[in-house]
Length: 242
Image (cartoon, rainbow, N blue to C red; front, top):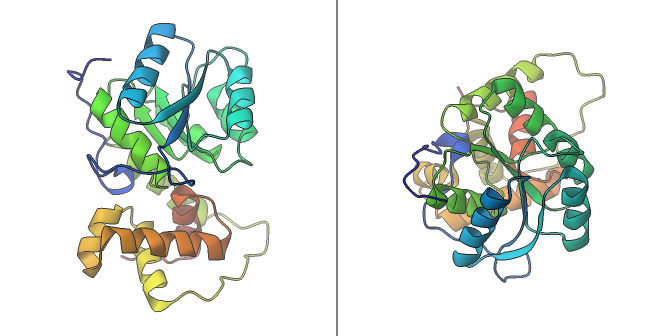
């Protein structure tokens, strides 16, 4: 892949901090599966991620293979193309939804409907393929940390959809919110506005790592899996700050 391509991955919900690496749950390098039906692109992405110090556990050329290899290897991140033979990207997202693996979509399409469908199916982030190698590497690291990464302009779309969904009648009773500390509640409100961990840290005069710890503790208490779910949860319950 060439670094000459320029697509800003944006701020807010779209934030990955450039150059900041993540570790896997085991403390080692981030583990990845790359799924794309174009062999040159797939191999280039896998090579760039490996060169950046990540462990590429497997690659896949179609939807069923992406699901099977993700379930077999349990990577930290599945880098997934939306248009795969045999199984659409959003179907792959749903099929691996029970895993701890986070899904980062890399797609040639920036269509709003494609973005929303992928996020509703469980994708944590969405980049268009015009992103540079450095941006993709940063996005995979951010995804492994549990952050939501979106190509510029798409973060607002996702937040807007969450707000719209929060005004719709709830068919299920709301689950009681477990007791959160004052700081966890404060961080949750800022997460709901789409701020990045770095921006939240600056706002509250605490470290980036402390923000991450508060978010992880809140996810555990709320029995949620990633930041996308946390934003949806917070907005649905009116916790978004003006």
